[in-house]
Every structure is written in C-alpha cells, then in structure tokens.
Length: 431
Image (tube, rainbow, N blue to C red):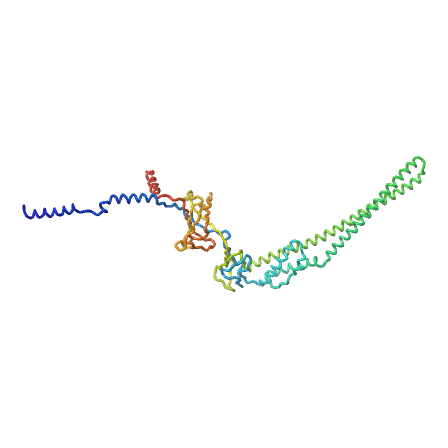
C-alpha cells in the first residue's frame, strides 16, 4: 500500500475520532426539553396574565358647591381692591370697588339703614322711624333720584304718624261712637216706656169702646181716648225715627273711622313699597359697582390686578374656593362597548391640564349609567370620585371651571389565552 494512502487513512481516522468523541453543549443536548419548558411557561403565562377591556370617553369634572367666580357687571376703573390673594373671605364681604359717580361709603350706610328698619316696618312697627332717623345723603350717584323719591314718601309717612292729627281724629271718632251708643241706649229705654204706655192706652181705648157700644159712655169720650191713643202711636213713630237717625249717625262715624284707618294703612303700604323699592335699587347698584364674595372660602385672583385699572364688563376677577367641596365626573362614552359598562367599575381619569406623567391620574368608580343616548348618540355616565381630586401620586389638583379630561372605564379583566382562543374561534367560525 502506498505511503500516501496510509497517511490519509490515519488523518481521516483522527477527524472521525474527534467528531465521535466531541461532547455538545448542554443547551444543545437539552434543547428540546428547554423549548418545551419555555412553551409551557408561555402557555401558563397566557392563563395567569390578565388584561382589562377599556371603554374610552371624554370627562368633564363637576364640583358640588365648588369654587364660584366673581364677575364684573359693568365696565369701569378698578377704584379699590379690598382683599389680598388667598385671603379668607365671608359671604357678602366687599372684595373690590368699581368706579362710580356716587360714593360707595354713602351707599353702604344707606343699605345698613334700610336693613335696620326693614323688619320692624314690615311688621307695621313704624316707631322705628323715630328711633332711626334717615341721614341726608347727597353723593349717591345713579341712586340719588330713587333716594329723593323715597324721602318724599318718608316725609308723608312721618306727617301721618308723627303729627298726631290722625291719632287724635281717631280718638275723637271713638268718643263720638261712645256718645252715640249712650244716646241709642237712652232712646231704646224711652221707646220701651212709650211702648208700654201705648199698650196701656190701647187697653183703655178697647174698654171704653166696649162701654160706648153698650151705651154706657158717650161717643165724645171715646173720641178723646182715640186721640190720646193716636198721640201715643205718633210718639212711638217719632222715637223709632230718632233710633234710626242715631244708628245712621253711628254708621257714618264708623265709616269715617274705617276711611281713616284705610288711609293710614295705605300710607304704611306705600312706605313699605317705597322702602323695598329703594332696597332693590340699592342692591342693584351694589351689584354693578361692588364685587362681593358669593360664599365663604379662600379668595384667588384670576389675573394680576391693580387699582385704577380699566376692567371690561363680564370679566372674572376672583374665585372663591369653599373649605370643603365634593366632585364628580361626567363621562360621555360612545356606543362602542357601552354594554360592558356596569356600576362600581373602576375608572381612570387623566386631566388634560395636569399631565399624568407629572401629576398622575384620578381614580373613580361608575355610579350611574344613562339609559337613553343624548343628541350625539352618546351615553352619559356619572363617575364618583372617592378621593376627590387627589391623584395616585398623592397630588391634590386645583379645581377650575370646565376642566376637561379623558376617562378609561375598566370593564373586565380577561386572561390572555381567552383573547387568543376567542380570536381563533372567530377565525374558525368564519371558515
């Protein structure tokens, strides 16, 4: 055998031997087992891993007894700012003054005087007008004309009540009625006596008439008795006329008394109406030229403000945040997936004005679902906010009107394998 062939056989034998004696890596030797275990883990993961179904919608945050804005009713310069930013205020407290032709201090004093006498005057206790006389004001601006009209009505009322003329006339009428009552009683007694005399005279006349018919008395004597009877009857008629005149006089006095009382009552009503009208005009003036706190709470400026700054009408200058406020979300969802939404499902709300990556999101729960769609074929869902405007990062968001957000209603958690098999089942069903 040639030497070259022998050498080739030895070389081939060596490579074969190395190949046969080579031990693969454990990953290659157990690859099938590992692949099977990985596949089993994936299948197990699809069983244990759950992914929720989500229905999206737009959300508007609504406040119950939330912050209220303070808006100007008329244009003008900001004459004076009476409060500082983030200051605690009470309802009705003046916040700022808008420039007017009248003096604000005089209008405030007038309103305090009206408030002091309103209740007693309403209860017909006019004596308060003597205890709390009206101060003369000459710098009420737009309110001056209404004030002067009220002063005229006040002066007429004081003349009725303070002069004493009408009270004296009333007492005089009551005295006249007393005397007429006494006179009527006296006339009644006289009438009773005349009636008795008339009855006695009638009895005598009947007796003598009988005797005359028996020829015992002469007809002349009967005529005399008849004359006496007629006189008694005439006296009764005159007494009846006097009683009628007395009653008529008493009725006239009562009518005068009623007219007097009606006059005084009408004057009271006119004054009460004038007072309420002046109060209404004063309050309207204050609404135009004075900004007041609509509720108790903390005040916030809406922009940088300074005195003598021109302010257009219908401009929001302040917000008043109450001490405690509750909120809820109004979510508008389309018809896609609306049937999956039920009460008490979790909702994630992401505020547009507060990015969720910096502030977090608000947690809520479905509390009510509308049965009827609105004009846009969307359904209204009420979202309860148990934690208010506190996010999952424990940040309290400041409420502003018309805050918008996006909402995600978590309808149900489904296993991953159910989603795969469900789609696979749909594909097979289509075939």
